[in-house]
Length: 364
Image (cartoon, rainbow, N blue to C red; front, side):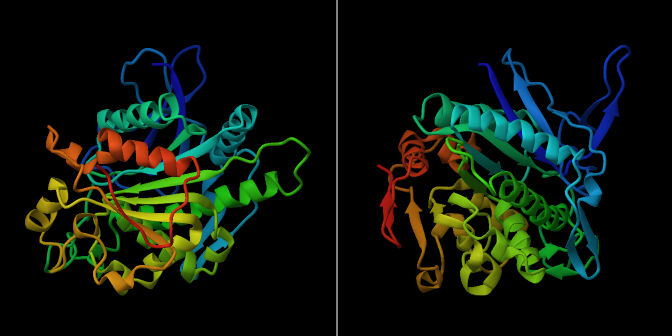
C-alpha cells in the first residue's frame, strides 16, 4: 500500500546524522517507551510507506517552533508564525497537496498505550477505510501522537502518580496534561495558518474541510485542550474549525458534560459533533477496574449521564447492537476501524450526512 500522511507529536524526537545525507529527525525510541516525557511543543513530520514495512516517521527541522507561541504563567500569547518553523513547513506541503486534489483533511488522536506498530496500524486502517475504499473526500491524515505509555496518565485514587497536584483525576504534570496544553497551541497555529492562507480566496481555489476523530483517552487530552483555549480567550477563534468532530469510545467519566463546562463547549468547534459509544467496549469495561479512576463509568461505555447534560447540537451514536466481539480485545475499542457498519456510518458522516440535533443511531 503506497501512502503518504502527516504526523505531529509530543513524543521525544532525536537528530540522526547519516554521512552524505541531510540531517533527519526521528522518534527517540522506536517503540513508545515508559520513560518518554511529553516535549515542549508538537514536532511535525511525515509518514511515507511505499513497502508496507513499519518505518518510523521522519520529522521536519523543528527550528524556532517553540517561539511560535509563548507559554508563560499568565497564559498562551500568540507570536508571529515563523516562516521556517516545522509546522509551517508541514502545513505548506499538506495544504498544497489537498488543494491540488480538492481533498479534505482528517485529524486523528489515539488514547493510551499506542506503540509505533499500533500507530502505523491506525494509519493503515484509517487510510483503507476512509481514503482507499470509503468513497469520502478525505485525502490526507494528520495523526497526533503523544507518549501514551508514559507517566501520570491516571490518578491512583490517593493523588497523582508522582505526588503531584491532581485536577479532574489527572496529574497536572502528566503527559496527558502537557499534551492537552500543547494541542491548544498547535490547533491555534493550524487555525491561524488557514485563516492567513485563505483570507483572500482566488477563483477556483479549494479550501479543504477538517474532520477530527478523538479516540479513547485522547478525550482527556481534548478536555484539557479546551480548558486552555477557554482560559486564554482563544477558543472563539477556533469555533467551527472542524466540519465533523467524532468523540469516539471516550475514556472519560460519563458525567463529563455535566462536570466540565470546557468539554461541553467542544461541540462549538465543529459544525456537527458525535459522541460514539458501545456497551461492549471491553477496554473501557476494564478501565475502571484496573485504574480505579472514579465512581463513574466511562462516557464511551454507557453514553452521557445524565442524558439531559448533552449539548443540543450533539448527536449520540451507540454501536452496541451491531458491534460483535473481535480478537484481540482492543478491536472492541477500535470499532470505527474494524466494524463494517460503523466504518460505513463514519464515511457517510464525512461525506456530509446530516442528522437531527440529538439522534440515537444503532449500527446494525
